[in-house]
Image (cartoon, rainbow, N blue to C red; front, side):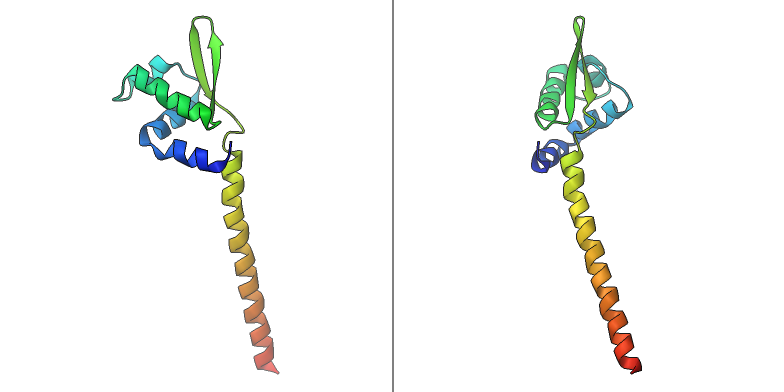
Length: 108
């Protein structure tokens, strides 16, 4: 999934809270709903959005469904943000080169 869907999915504070809870360990809807001021059906809906964005996956275990973070779920977002870092470093490097060139020109 592309980074815009990840941004949209994580923009909601409840979904972000659920996603962060899954960092610690896989959990069921019931476990996730216990510590939140939303119902189990609401947690299920949030999980569907996270799953649709490619951030979590569901693993059936008997009569339970465990939700866990997909290890590669943030890869598109990471690549997008890395592009900003690369642009920043390139601009910084160009500014240093400009100043060095200016200093060398002033010494002549």
